Length: 83
Image 1 (cartoon, rainbow, N blue to C red):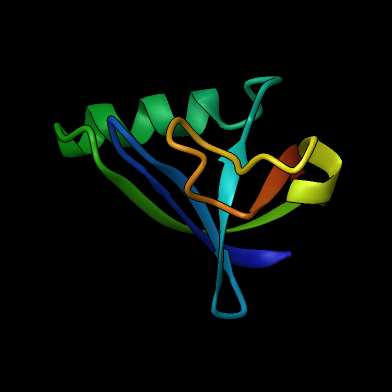
Image 2: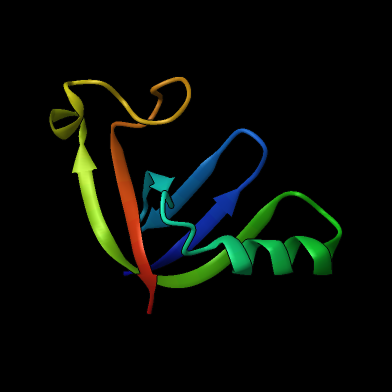
């Protein structure tokens, strides 16, 4: 899926076709990329157009709870690899 990741202190989002998903990278697939971008930009906020393979889960898959620290997202994108 082609989209944009936005990662800051409090948020990790994947935006695809106008929809915003909580970005779950539990396996650390994006760790190296994020570390490189932060070092190059000397900033914590990362915004990058990217192609990711993974799957989407909804609140129904999460015991009817939202995703993210404040459960503000109704859908999550789970990263499996970079395209």
